[in-house]
Amino acid sequence: MAALPDGGTEQLAELRELLRTAGVAGVGEMIQRRAHPHPNTYLGPGKLEELKADLARADANLVACDDELSPRQERNLEAALGVPVIDRTAIILDIFASHAHSADGKLQVELAQLEYNLARMRGLWSHLERLGGGIGTRGPGETQIETDRRLARDRIAALKRKLAHLRSSRSVMRAERERAHLPAVALAGYTNAGKSTLLGALTGTDAGVRDRLFHTLDPTTRVLRAGGRDYLMTDTVGFIRKLPHQLVDAFGATLEETRRADLILHVADASAPEEELLAMTAAVEDVLSEIGVEEQPRVLVLGKADLIDEERRRELARRHPDALLVSAVTGEGLDGLRERIEEEFARTLQDIELLLPYEEGGRLAELHGLAGDLVREDTAAGVRVVARVPPSVAARFARFALTARSA
Image 1 (cartoon, rainbow, N blue to C red):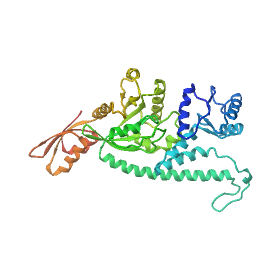
Image 2: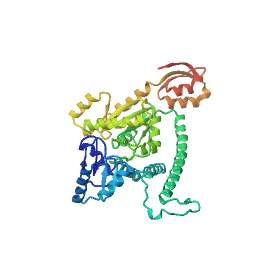
Image 3: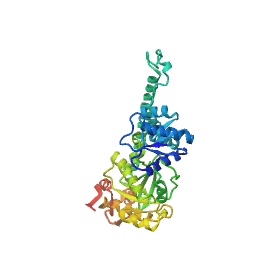
Image 4: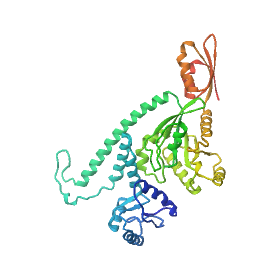
């Protein structure tokens, strides 16, 4: 493997994990510290010769770089080394392709791959350069590479249309959920931080858990019951340092759930060394900022508490005083997390006092589901109800209001 990280060898740990997830075994590592990668070959000439010798000694058949290479850098590296060269983005795309199961996820992966590869198409068919016109295919003098690029662009356009149709279908389902006025919580965090495990532990469901990067590509939504109220909790795709823009753009389905959430639980791995923990949380915050969710309230949840000792617990309490320490395996801290979710939503609730006519019995049952706990009193004119509800629900029942005031 060859890489040009910003710091020391610990930054290659993520690349090693990506390669392990992709089924590639590493036999060596190389780092070159430069202000900027070489524009033609990524590595400098001397380092390139050193790498070539190392490849021969190790009998390696692949070079992986911990950055996104330009098409020229990739082409020149392969010519100089005599082995295939892949970059960080190609590895992540390969992992996504193997983990995508839903029709939506497969379309998104194919779109990201096509957009990544479009710029890398080059004239591999020079012997076909002088081609005549074809019926409905090539124009006069169109080369094979131009044909392939046109076909790729056509496929990209078709995929975008299909994804737009799927987004429209999702918006209908989302509108049905929003009509129920259930608060939405999104789990966001670094890949493999334990979000799916936490979702299963909080909701008492099987969320599909495996110890590998990017196991969750499609949003998974479950119902969390806390304090007499239902919450919709959604697991999202894991973030990563230098997440390729193709994936940020393509995986709008998962990221859209994060954008629309009322509360974001930022899940991080408490067992990671502090420097690594800070780097991972910063990477997640960068992506959240990129997709436009700076304003949403969020809670830092430090998971995998069962893997740390007392000294690390004290350090985390000192460095992250507002975070919640939990373990989805032992159940530690889960009750406190449910209470924190309730508290966060309670800040947005309004007190309402309603008089519901007896013939509106269905509205009373509906309010029970939306408000959780409420106080009711039967009167001659109807049922008098006092409850705390989200502002949207207060507006929905405004015509029955006796009084309404902010909480």
